Structure formats: structure tokens, C-alpha cells
Picture (cartoon, rainbow, N blue to C red):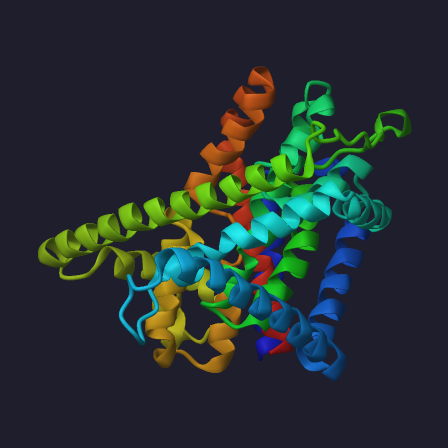
Length: 393
């Protein structure tokens, strides 16, 4: 039965993407089928084999160690603020982002990360039917972040037509930055975080190739990466430390605002309609939860968490999932967890448009115009990844 629901789910996702396609006649079926097959194979390897589980265990242990080291710095500065036995979210989940940001900066500085991103991007371009720039951008977005990635391709931004620009932005919204992966792993199971990262990479290309199909001419398929401005090692360290801290502060501020706002709206809806705002959204999103393989009995609650992620951000939704996990089956927990690992929410539209506008004002205005279409496509990517996982769990 789960395979039938999954097939229906795939058809619904592809149909919803096809409805808003900018060029339906140019949709390439072969790369889409190939990438779905690759998603399934990778999902099986990661979740259902000893090799995959071992790999995830190694990745989780690495991030676990990194979080321990980060904890040393946090404890030195903020030690004594929290009572023994307490684990404040800001100290234990957000501030370690600073240390992981530093590590990314070091890998960038010694040229390891650019080589890896370019190599994987070129490999991806062989199977996704898109350009080298698009493939590189998707990998880079997952490693250095949805706004920082545009700095590395700023020379080419002004030359890109709107369709290629859409694909670059869609990749940035469909993935998550490596700097906050450790934070996710403290809130949901690491194996679902890793699986989502891999699936979303291909899912972004699948949905973009339906919504926004095009062919890149060989003479236009040039990958020219902008090197960072030359800095001393310690200048770079200072910059990435501050960048990581800014991310932690921004996420913390957004959580304060969104959690408080959702609590207020829930209270108002409860008084007026007898149902919370999230509960109402749960009914709206329940059909999507069902085609993702979640049983009817859990679909409404799952739909509420999905909606929370869309209208607020993934951290708020992960906190809700953590508080409600006892009411979900292990399979449902896995499916929802994979859905939550992406930047597909309303605030990301402003972040991406702002990042592009800071580098090229004209192109930033173009991105702002198709912002809702970006969010629509990135949300379909999350649903697609969850459906793939539902076939394996």
C-alpha cells in the first residue's frame, strides 16, 4: 500500500510542478527519471544498509565532537548562566554554529572546499541535464549557505537570464547550510538530516527542470568561480566567527518573534474558532502529509508541523516536532524530519533576494518577482524527498 501512495504522491508533486511550468514542451523526462532512481538508491543505501548507517554514524559522531568543542567555547563565555542540568536552546543549539562557521572558513581559505564543490558540481551536471554553473551552485549552497553562495558566482550574475537565475535561487532555498547541520542534529535524528541533504540536492534539480526547463548552450555553460578577496588567515577567522555569531543571533531573534507570534495567533484562534491556528493549517496540509506516506490518524498533526515550517522556519517546526514526537510513529517521525530539513519558508525569499540584490540590484529585483514561485518549488522538493523516504522506511 505504501508504494501505491508513494507513486500517487510522485504524480501529484510532478503534476503540481507541471501546472506552473514556464515551458512545458521543453521538460526533459529522461534526466528526471534518472534522478528519481538515484534518489531511491541513495536513500536505500543511507537508511537500509550497514554501510549507509555506518557512514551516517561517522558523520553524526564528527558533528557530535564539533559540538563538544564548540561547547567548550560557549561554556567559557556563558558558563554559570544556566542552572545545572538545563540546556538552553541558544547556548546548546545556536551558538555552536559559530565554531562550525569557522571550520567552513578554514576549508574555504585552504582551497579544499572550492575544489570539492566544483568537482561534485561537474559530476552532477552529467546527470541532471542542466549547466555546470547550476550544478556547482547547488553543491555550494549546501556547504556554505544560501546567501553566501552568490558571492562565489557574482561575476556571472549580471549575465544570467531569468530562467537560469531561478534555478540558482531554487537550489539555495531547497538545501541547508552545513554550518547549521549540527544544530539540526541536536533536534532530530542525524540519519534523517544527512538523508534529506542528499535527496534535496537532486530534488531541487528535478522540480526546477519541470517548473523551469531550458537548455544551456555549450558556449554559455562556463563555470567561473569568484575567489574571495585576499585576506590574512586571522582576518578570515575573525570574519567567519562574526558571520557565525550573526547567524546564531538572527535565528535566535526570529525564533523569539515567530514562537511568540504563533502562540498569540493560536490563542486568538482558539478563543474565536475553538481550534488553534496550527490545528487549522494542519487540516489544510493533511492531504500533503498523506501523499508523503503519513497515515490519516497522524496526518493532521503532521500537517500542522509542515505548515509551521512554511510560515515560520524549520527551527520552530523542529521544536514542535520534538514536543509532539510521542504522538507519532517512528516512520512518521522520519518522514516529517526529512521534510523539515530545508530553507523553504517565506523568510528565505527575502534572504535570497536581498543577497542577490546586494551583488546586482537589477537581478535582485528579478528574484523578488518570482519569490513565491521559488517557495512553491522548494516546498515541492521537500514533499518529494519525504515521499522517497516513505518508500524506504
